[in-house]
Length: 172
Image (cartoon, rainbow, N blue to C red; front, side, top):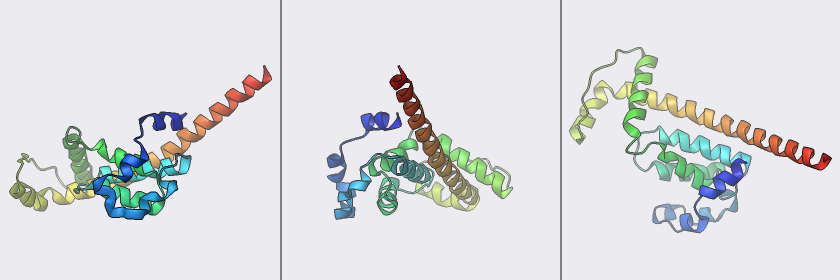
């Protein structure tokens, strides 16, 4: 069942409440609905986490936490899922965002060479920036919808499977 699997890997809610970066949210973190694992809260958490994973801003975890608090999604999951874009996966994911954005805007892909400098970032905003940002927005929405409805259907399938298992056990 997804609930058991998720619970196994989820950190303790006290640890998250005491995180110095999340102290900005104060008493909002004491809402018990942010820590429950049910179909709705987990689906919302996946949607939130996947959305902010594709948004190229610093402090994605704080944005995901704030959104989880507002829409009553599972807070630990929404923050953890943001880490899909990590230093290892980020280049591939953001390149895919650029390619999708160039395709959506019908602009030719431009050759570029990455440099780890602010000047390169500023210069690139005018050349590859529009395609990149449109691609990020499109993939953020797409994957958050896939995550939301995927978790809903996976959860329902799992519960249905458990019910059938119980029924066959009772008949014996």
